[in-house]
Image (cartoon, rainbow, N blue to C red; front, side, top):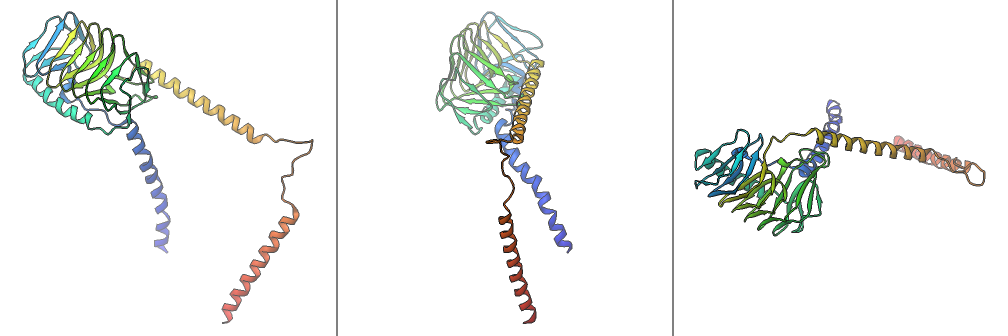
Amino acid sequence: MKTLKKMRFIPLLLTPLLVAMMVLPGTLMAYGPTVDLLSTSNFAVLANTTITNVPTTNISGDAGVDIGVASGSEIGGGIVLNGVGTTHSNDALAIQAQTDLVTVYNDAVGRTDTATVPVELGGTTLTSGVYSSGGVLQITGTLTLDAQGDPNAVFIFKSTATLITASGSNVSLINGARYCRVFWVVPSSATLGTNSTFVGHIFAMASITANSGATIQGQLLARTGAVTLNANTITNGICAITAAAEEEVVAEVAAEEEVAAEEEVVEEEAAAEITVTGGEIPITSTPWYNVLLVGVALTLIGAVGWLIIRKKIYE
């Protein structure tokens, strides 16, 4: 008896476990963990060989505004580091960051694709995921990244060749999306167009070129080649949820709740509504003869069962 009582509680214990097994994988697949930047997080610009610049490039932010080269020593002039940023030429910090960049790159490129995107990303709106084009990646016009109210949404884009953005192109973040959750994996070189606005962390195997007037919110990290700057504005700040983003998320949630409440009212009104045709109240009761037939059938079944049981008792 005790064993049976204990077994009754097993379904109660299994229920929350099964719910968690169904919910958690979906959540992880939708957002995924962010990419750990390791010591590269200290750098706004990191190259292996050289960093060249056409004055003046401004670099600011609280997350990491250092610039550095790992194996070379040439860092062009005219780069203004606003804040606590410093320059590293083939020193221990730059070398360690370049070593960590290999790990960071491999982490991002090793993520399982969740969708395939066209080569041209301009004019599209994408939610969180790991995207691969199966070729180069291009942005002409505006690419919109929609976090759907989740500030931890992660966007990873994987090219199999180059990343090229057109002049005046733009990467726009909406519904709580944050630049520090956007990553670009480029197995060749990346080129950002003149006066373009770019968002995210670029991990390039070879080199990165930011053409005149390009604005970057994130990092330019090149593994084996150089980084070329030209009167750019680079911001690598603390990845905080802004007040505007919080208000946007709250407003979106409130709107969804309002729509759900309205739908619930409509459903309740529809359920309560009774349609009357021809001025007569619709017949909703069961006819008396159906009830009688059911009663007779149950009586016969009971009688047969009683006879069978009685027979077994006297055998």
